[in-house]
Amino acid sequence: MRLTSKEARELLEHERNNSEDDRWINHCICVGDSAGKIAKALQDKGIDVDVDKAITLGYIHDIGKRFNEHGGVFPHAINGYNYIKELGYNEEYAGICIKHSFLNNDIDCISNDRDETDKTNPNYNFVKEYIKKEYSIEEKIINLCDLMCTTKTLTVEKRMIDLLLRHGVFAKTHYHIAETIKLKEYFDNLLGYNLYDLFPEIKENL
Ligand SMILES: [Fe+2]
Image 1 (cartoon, helix red, strand yellow):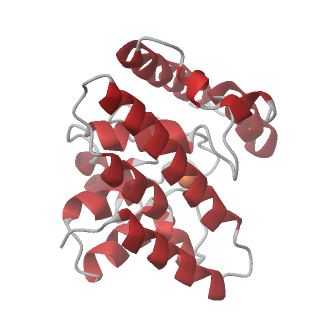
Image 2 (cartoon, rainbow, N blue to C red; image 1 turned 90 degrees about the vertical axis):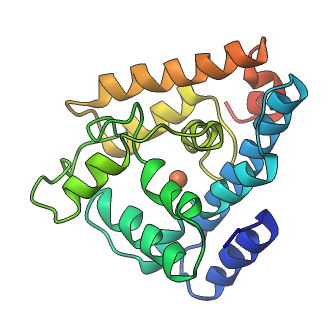
């Protein structure tokens, strides 16, 4: 079943009643709305992008946080994936719940490895193989926007510092930062200009 951005937003807003802390919900809205802006700008350049799908994926990418299960990167990814599938939505919507956490199709390319990607986790091999599939352009936009958004849109550089300050520096941090910057440049090149131009408010958020 297809999921629209309107339905995704309703799914997300429904969680406000169940969440003590709704910052993750506002983060998802920021990711979805920022993704929509980038997708529309790419479309204006003649690139084949589904703007509504980009917004939809942004809204639901962290939906697994509704289960409030801690312990590294796996719980919110797997819980979100299963939840979206159980609701009957297509694989492409469920998949973002996993894919958004990993860059470069690599289970080791995560924003922090303080919990280490636990090789004994029963989902380890499933996730490792799952993210090897080519990411769609809408999925790549979500990867980038997740690294530009807290509850407001920031430069990736500021967001990286935000992550470093909150979590610290770990063995894979350098690799992850390098891949984040590559991803941002990938979209700058597609657009033919610096994508920060799409977000004038970014200067206020520095
Ligand atoms: Fe996120």
